[in-house]
Length: 396
Image 1 (spheres, rainbow, N blue to C red):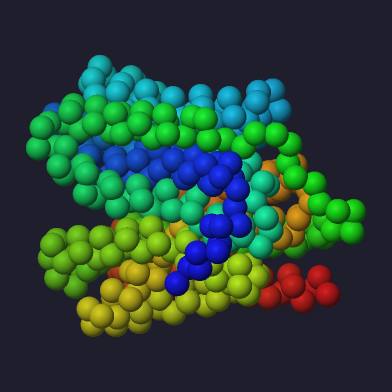
Image 2: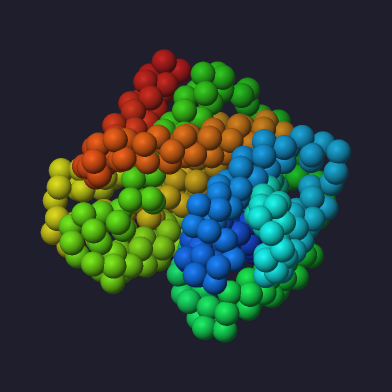
């Protein structure tokens, strides 16, 4: 269990800042990206868009996310970070209300792109801004609380959207807008005030060799690619590949989402105890075994649930660990921390997008062979672990 003294060591201002950053993840990624998955078939059935056009609108959000992750830090050089974060929350909120009105493909594309841009910028800026004010021995649990917003959005997207759709597609979009507006109001005045606390001179250390950071970026990117088989194909594998049906597939997705909600908190708690580097290696190892379960065609339901739960937990939990590892490598370099997290986020998003399209191509060309997709995932995760081990050995 997470000890209560973890929270007692945080000042009220830092606690509020963590809540604000949590809200950005929930709005910008949890809702702006994942809520579209259950909405997509409803949008098509309501004849707002044809299936192919609706799929392109999903890609618009990913393109916007890449742009936001790439431009978030450069924008922060010209605008106050808190002002930018508030503007991005407002933009995401406006996109939900705008998408409630089907005024054409271009209208929808621009607003889905804007929502993605806001999510990418918030992911790059919010967590580093808040964690710089958190004591080093509490950054794991604090980072976990922040990233929990993404997992909460996954669960909310699977539970709230079906309820809203009872009232209609337009009402569902507006309902999301109302929720996003409420979260924006909650986060508005919670951001850190004052300068980043300075450590003693003895605590100042030189940045690590650049190859260590480059290795971390590559590990994170490969890790993102290794998740794609579960994120895109696992439910279909269970439902159609194994013939267990859509209902059973949905149960696996709920397990995935619940685990994604708790994963960052548990990962951060472990990292605070054993360090971020050992925790990250344990994460890679557990994910290798979890992806190997469907790769080896182990079809027992308990094993498949274990696979879904482990990967779901680390889809968000690894974000906490990599963010914490960057702060561990650059303990007294806040500007370098933000720059490194920006690069890591861009590498993550690019590799995940490439993997999504690449594995879709492999799946089509292989005649629907699920095992080859999961084998590729195992290889990606194994490479992540080997790169981390090799980088640490060279740094000695």
